[in-house]
Picture 1 (cartoon, helix red, strand yellow):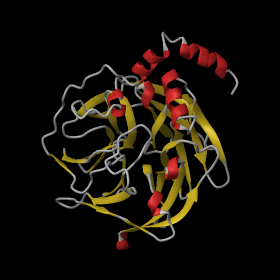
Picture 2: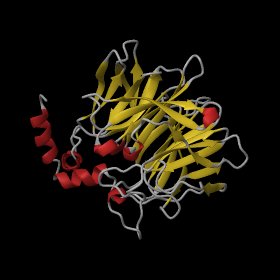
Picture 3: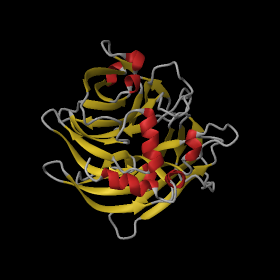
Picture 4: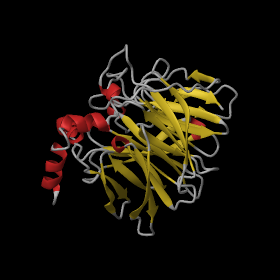
Length: 351
C-alpha cells in the first residue's frame, strides 16, 4: 500500500480525526420536510428494505433483514428475506420469495441487489450477502411461476472483501463496491474515523477479477446508464456521485463528480429517462446512534441530466424519521415510487 503512510498522516492532522468523521457523516445537518401526498407503508416489511431493483415488467425485488456492524436491526435473530412486489397491481403487496434447498438460508444476510435479463429472458438476481459477517455474492435464477429463487452459486474472491452493492453486466459478471478496505468492524470504524480513501470498485467475471476504480471514502451504491456506457458510483461519506466511463476491457475512467449535501446510498436508474434516483441519509451520525427520540431521517433525490454541466437535483421526499428511518434506496416504475431503508420499513407512493 504505497503512499498510505503519508495519507494516514494527512488524515490524522485534518484538524483532528473526530472532526473529519463528523464531516463525513454530515452530523450537524437537519432535514427540511418535503411531503408526497399518496404514500403508504408496505405491509409485511418491518426489518429493512435496503435495496430494490425493478424489472422492466414492473416486478420489484426487495432485500430485507440486513444486519450490518454498528447499525440497528429489528430482526437480529431472523434470516434475511427477498420480497417481490408486482407494481402493475392496483394495490401491490409484498410477498416473500421462496429460496431453493441447498442454500444456507439460516445465515442469509442480504445487502445490495441487481437483476440481469439474459437473451433467453432468464432473470438472474445477484444478492450481496454477509454470512457470518463475511462478503459473498449469491447468484439466483428467478422462477416467476413458482414465486421462487433457485440458488445457482456463491461467489467469493479475495478482492470482494467488504461488498456493499453490485450491478450485473452479464449472467455471471458484475461490478461491485467495497465500502471499506477492512472487513473487521473495529478497523472499519477506524478507517472511517480517520477519513481514509481506501474503498474501491471491482469487476468480477469467472475469467477475470480486477480493481477498476479506487480512492473512495466509502463506495456504496452502483448502477449503470441505460445505454450501458457509464457506471454511476455513490461515495456515501464524500457526499457525491461519480460518473465513470465503461470501456471494452471493463475498466473505468472518471468523467465527472456531482457533489451533494447529503449521504447518497443506493442508486437506481430510470430506464426511460436515464434519471438517477437515490435514497439518502441527511445526517449519517443518527444511523449509528440509536436514539428513538431523534431517529435517522429520510431523503430522496432525483438527478436529471447528470452528464450536463449543471445537472438538475430535486428533493422529491424528505422527513425527520417519524415515518421512515434511514432511507437507503428509491426507485420508480410507471409513476410509482418505492422507498426503502437500511433496517426500518418501506414506502409505496404514487407520483
